Length: 563
Image 1 (cartoon, rainbow, N blue to C red):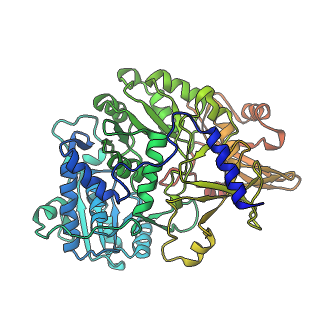
Image 2: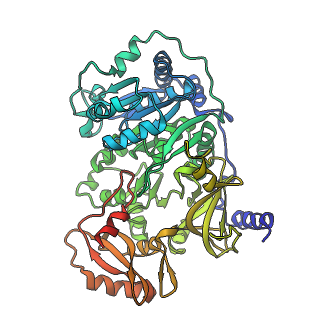
Image 3: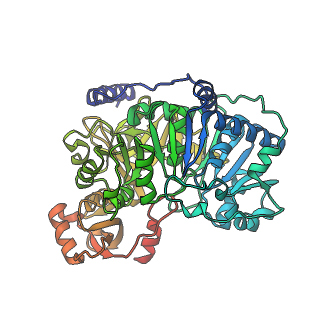
């Protein structure tokens, strides 16, 4: 099959399917330059506009720019040079935003670490990245102290969220802001260190292709790998996704609670607001009451939610006490719970806007590779085949290849999903062999199963190793999970396979029921027989909860151990 003809045919199909109101090209409000320069531009153009609200503590654009300048000077004074990695071990907070843009401004490399990490996990990532400077939440200092002597850390900065706690908070406080400030003589106190710094702001200006971040993959098995992302990757992710799926502008109010160490949270909290020049309402962590109060108080117009979070709001006993009708776009992310027509209809009745699936993406591609916005008429996106993830964002391409030969497969075939994107990582940090295996001729070979339909839409079918063979037929756990998500009594499900002497493999669904549900394994099995082909019907196992990673993925290796 001719690759050029294949891609041309696919581009024509996708152009024909493109929603009428959705932009067809990436846009750059301040040109193609690093996002640190976007921050400088907004600070000049709208210095008094609020950049960030945190429970009543606000930063205007001029302050965010000035404080990140001062932090860049401090990092330089501590010996950080362009290309050095700076680790950030923080929950969502303004200090993280200040440090993030300081790292970019001085040409260093942002290396976020999950604040849920234990000592071994922190030690591994510090050693792997080679970070010598770390900013941490002061409540995490015991974890840092446990590994500091074994790592290359020269300087530790720490900060308390309690320092930012307003006397009269605007919304219910997260418990992280209630923790008392920790003192000690083995770290630099972040805000006093900024005040005391006398160094000049570094004159360095990063270039688009300079390394900007090491975003570690959050897989369910194996050790994480650092994906090397440039300033260009960050900028293109914004320029292709913000106009296509979000529609943010300077008047928007965007809320983020997704953890910003996670690349989806980095996009939503750290990148998109500064790209668009809008106001960010930041939550330290998810809390349904704080979310509802924030939407009402700040008149939030845009946000992204896990479907689980949307379901919690819909079922909250105090939901009628809040006005959520300022919302204009609410994207959703299906991890455990899946987006359904019922959730969409209930959310629209509550807020006036429709839930839509945000995107398909991977850490390797900066995670915003497709969009579904504009494909909601008559629930087209939800009534298409399960695992529908829409169309590629402008500038990104997909193809499906044979796993063994790498040959292109005709539209409608199931095979390895491959993606080519301007946001594609430079490679895995210090892993040349794994980089070469994944990156071939400018394409990322994901190792995942996918399909491009004959209309040009993308379907993500899951990890190849998770595909089951039942009586010779292919069964995709992600598809079964999507179908199970339609059952009104189920909170969550995860499907794996077990060996079966007669059938080859047997799908097994671990399911979590809603409280007070009267369903049992027998009634759920009967429902499955009506909802799916007989060979797909899973064995049902009831569990109280599913084992989860810090980024909201199911630890299927632990479920396999239960089998």
